Image 1 (cartoon, helix red, strand yellow):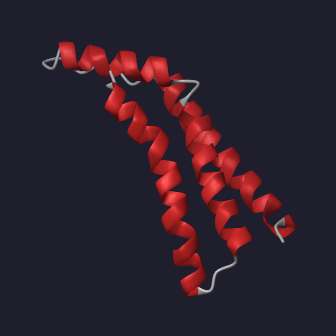
Image 2 (image 1 turned 90 degrees about the vertical axis):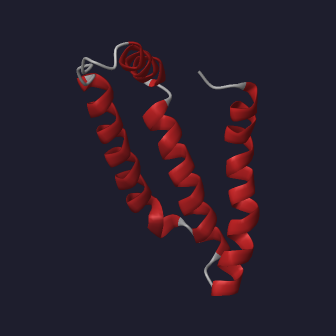
Image 3 (image 1 turned 60 degrees about the vertical axis):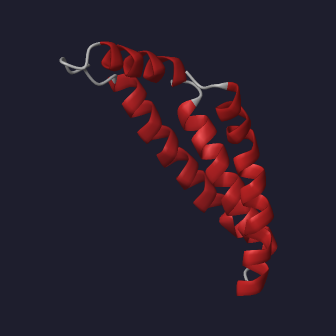
Amino acid sequence: MPTQKAKWRMVIAPLAGWVFLLPNAAIKGYSVSHTLYVYSGVLMMFVIMFVPVAKRVASDIGEQEEKPWSKVPVNTFALYWMIGAATVCIGGGAYLWPFVA
């Protein structure tokens, strides 16, 4: 399971990405609003994809590490949830794209 240091990195990484993303977008001439929209959408997509099934996936990983000689079956609910959530988020982002000014 994640250590305290790993938890802090998970919090700091999106903020650090934001700090480097805006100057890079400005240099390349991208719209700041569109850049932040895409960045925020991707971060939210990962949260929506992983948080509801995190315990199931973590237990599967733990079980696989305990018994490396046998293959743990894929948790189909978690797999379909992540694929479906990603599809819905991408579709919603594409639908709302014209409203970003």
